[in-house]
Length: 560
Image (cartoon, rainbow, N blue to C red; front, side):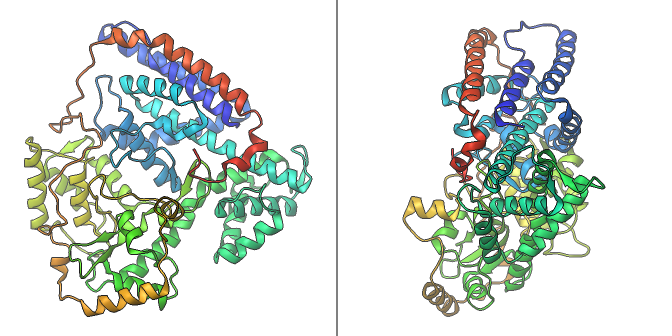
């Protein structure tokens, strides 16, 4: 589906959902209006898709609603029972990471906090800044209900799929095929392999020939043969027992499904990396590896990943510098950092799937609200799978139960917000090998290696001499720190400073944000919003008509 149609679908859906310029009404009328809006949303969304995609979209929408439901119910709501823009970005970010391993550009914490993040930024410079700002203002005042949040996710997926179709169109053109060409099985396989090589390398198929792409992927991607088998499995699942000839539409379906599944499939490489780091720990279960051991893995263990410079690791938030003479790499912070991502698309990068998000989702499902008492949390956590640091029978340690009570006292309500820095810090101490340590906002700046090098004029990869020097220094200053000291709840790594995903929300039982009463002011913006969306849609239609021919201009996943 072309990006233009996907974005137009999104705007139509949002305007239908918004209830713009409507007067206040009784609770009964509001409920009826909401139900009618949901029917209208589905109708408009389906109408803007062609018939052959309708069932697929219905299934995807239902799947996304199901995936989002536990998180949505657990997030703080506004007066409308909807989540605000920051919470929406947070939810969509977690959804795409967990479902696909996609770190969608624009769906990250802004300046280290989610409060300033806007979901519309997922479309980047493809939409005018002024028009996106007006739409973001509408969303800030109304928020997203569950259905709208899922529809927004579908719109993002549709736009991403449109990019895959554009890439395949470029490959077809290079090979002398048209979209009407029916390919044999071998021809289709070669096209899909070329697309995947382009996808993994982050290189536009218009920049290199098919042979150049396939040669480069074999040289730079050691598991390419396994990846090709993964593609054959996807072909089998998508096409089943269909005839051994492939029209363009079916090749597109395979490519879209391969991109959607690739993140989860390649997460096995992330788990292998984690296992390697766990074997390097001096103190089993600490979730930390001495820097000297880390670099030894690169020099003597043939682990090319473990070669980032100290400064780059610091910017990634992957260092524990509690003891400056005995610096350590924090395993989950390193695994989930941008240094381990593939620049696969102008919309997103494929990164390691965050194990902690799955644990948090299980907690959200058990607790069903934005906050809970320490006893409720301990009871729920005790029923989760144990950390890889504590296999077998386990329970939450008393010192960590005391810390959780301290967080509840900090909020003055006897409740602990689930979506805040302090709870994330507590989860890191309970699951030191799965949950990243949450540094204070503004103290780190995670970036891709090439971004770091461009913006700092420093290398992201350490030289062999540099690694050898740090290994030697590490051995000279090696401490006798015990496992308890290394990750003690009383250590300087425990910082009693909170940062909430929804800072306006009360932690007392998840009280909703205060209802906005100046609806007339919002009504004054209605015409401006409608005009902005209309003009934006027309501008996108004009600007993106030749999108298939201009895919080369979107080769960098960080492109605006």
